Length: 182
Image (tube, rainbow, N blue to C red; front, side, top):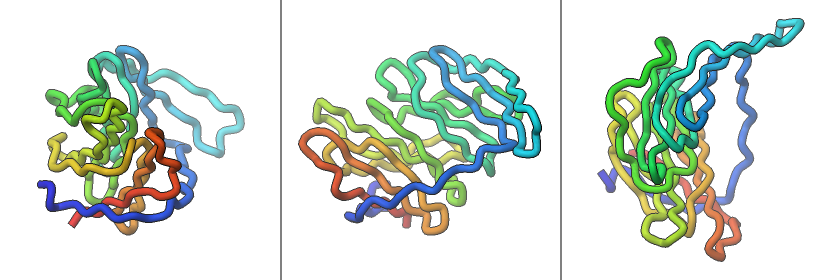
């Protein structure tokens, strides 16, 4: 639903650092996603190991994890139009990918609302939007037109707001766009 989201102008805020220690992180490669086991900070000597290779699709790009659902979301496809859902407990692809729109560049997850925000800069001028996917079902629930070329996206987990940066096409990046789910 398009009316479920609002766009607000805001100044960009710095991103908080992420803590990855002790988590399983999936990294996208050309044809598969690879799960890596990362050591905890208490480890005296880091030891990394590939724990699984997961056949996903082609031309894979951005990746994000919904920690509460134990799912990874990977954008890919011929023109980056699909979002693949991976169960991180079994390292298997769940169902068919959802079609999120052309030229997916970044993915960020709202952990509390279980929503994925995917930017689509679409430099030829036909898109320039952010699509929103329900991560419980991998279903696109909305799309919002924003800025000149939406690229980066980050989530304020406490306020449930997505901050989207714009780049290129003559825009100097002086402001970010804020999306809020109602």
